[in-house]
Length: 395
Image (tube, rainbow, N blue to C red; front, side, top):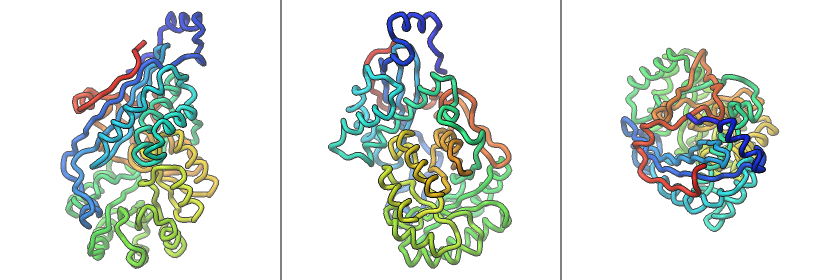
């Protein structure tokens, strides 16, 4: 648990000219951790031969300490490939933080992205920066003694949540039904299951069975993980209208803004996408083309909270609903700040990484009242760490 500086240390810093606004980053640590999954996971990308089953999640942690003794923690992630690359890129640019004012988060984001601009300002580069950016926001909120949501400006103290982790295509239908029932019993407010199989009639069978279990009033969504072409997405989308879904997610390739716009205009079921995009500019393409009803940015992919807030403002201006992808430990706070009632995605995968757990009650996830993200890296996460790198010196 991060402890604020002692009164004596703070007084000493003030006398030395290091008032809170003059504090500086003294030390940063990056850690690469591999979180093993209990069972290999498959979605439509695996069934179509584009990816291998998912067996672990790479986590890039960032920890920062200032001269006055304030600390923060942030993380980003990668599934299948990319974790070591993210760690390597973050390691190359991390020394740009030392001696900087931790309050100037957007300026530091710009400094970091230009430090590695030769490899681009999206993709792996921004995913590496995301862990640092999120850490700086966590530090700023801890310093203020506020939950991150309250630092940004919250609209609510809890957020509607839906579960995804129980409905993968690698899970047999009887087990999916068991998982759905367990999620509802736990107090989760919605269910999303995976679709996108080569034979989409099998998708309809799974959706029909889950809808029968949940009854017509319980929120249900599906996710095709980009595996349909435009004609298939239209045919299946029309067939799915019988099941009163609250969205169809990623029916087309993530970059097909015009195709998603066509579906959004022609189908009664809302369209959701955005999780695979890694910049504000890419999300703006969805927004300006009227491609989505629910936009799904991922702070860990777009470059952190600084960039996420820009997407959030654009989405609100366009009148869109929001449902960020994965990493509920981060997105719960951001969802609490969105003016329109959003959804947060419940995945239990990351829970072993932190000492704290999130509360779910009456279909909603409760925003923790602890300072910052309200999360502390667990000893189990430390044990799963395979590489680390430090710059600067601890206070």
